[in-house]
Amino acid sequence: MNAPVLRHGLIALSLVIFLLAPANAAGQEAEPGSDLRVWLVTAGPGDAVWERYGHNALRVLDTRTGYDVSYNWGIFSFGQPVEFIVRFLQGRMLYMMAPFDTRAMLGAYAQANREVVLQELALTPAERLELQAFAENNAQPENRDYFYQYFLDNCSTRVRDLLDLVLGGRLEEGFGEVHTHTSYRWHTRRLTQVDPLIYAGMDALLGAPTDVELTVWEEMFLPLTLRDAIRDFDVVRADGSVGPLVLSEEIAVPSTRPAEELSPPRWLWQFLFVGLFLGAVFGSLALPAVRTSTIGRRIVYGIAAAWSGLFGLLGLILTGLLFTDHVFSTWNENLFLANPLLLLVAVSLPLSNLDPVWSRRALTVSWVCTTLALVGLLWQLAPLSGHQNGMFFALLLPGHLGLGWGLRSVVGDAIT
Image (cartoon, rainbow, N blue to C red; front, top):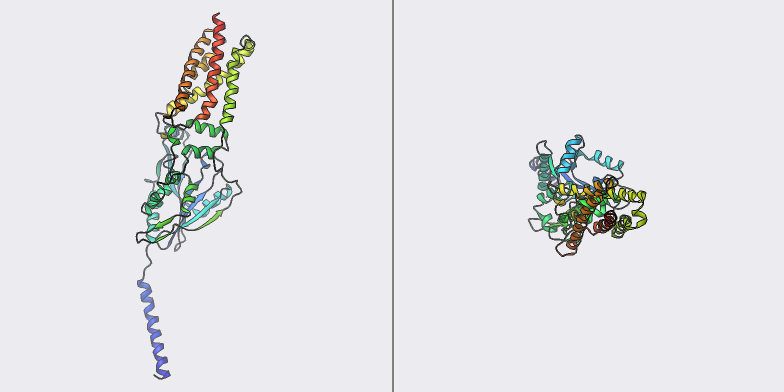
């Protein structure tokens, strides 16, 4: 074949390829969902109590349109204070899901000095499309509200469950039987220790159900656990192929905050010291110098009345929680120590300064409370108890014993 013929042939072939290429390209439509990219967005702890556990969302970017949105399941409002307080007391907190502009959301976290980590997820186009469709439907006014349960149904469990849905249940399959040697109480203590009053208050309100050991799946109620768990997680696809769930990870917003504590504090001895001190103060009523001094007796009565009123009120709250949807406040053995009967002691002690008969009434109720506390101690030591509330026995039992002993001496003097 001579050169001119070959050259003309190549030109003709090139022309055919050029003419046919657009038709082929037009006929090859992109798979639905291939224009989408998905990230797990995880924010570190903040200053407010409800921010101590961190937060997360799912970011979806449409690379064709540039639409960049993060779906957030952690929105609540103080807009109607009365309704908010009522729902809080009932354990029926109303939370909402809504999409946020990703750039604006990251800016808000930067202002709050909260670290944000982005993990791009290796989802198939179909999985990305399903995730976006579910989130968009969830964001509709008729679907966006849900009853918040701080351990079982929160911003992180909603994200976890949606990822598990599009992955065909593989997350729960991978983490549902992996135990952590931690509990809801363990994490609550760990994350609230920066504020001892909040730490003690929340620990007092949580019952025995929070002491059950968690699996990694359950521990994903914490956004940072979900972030860390999927980091090295491999997904087994329907065709048998295996690949990492996380394509890449980056710190989108750095923070100067110290890292969160890795374990809860051991404050048993501090609680015991305070308990023994108060028990000694109340028991000082047995000393003649205090018992026969009007000023000394009234000072001790005042401290004991405040102590009884505080923990009597706590007992009233614990009793009320039994009739709400606060499922993790059920079977709270702190009721052995802090019960509403203490309110009667709180009222009787000041009245004892007017009429000694009130001292006998305070003594009677105090003995009942002390007996209940001792029964609680026996229950706590028995293998039947699963409630890890030894700190509160250290704090309150010495006070019960000291007050009962001191009032016994006061009433004995009045009788003689």
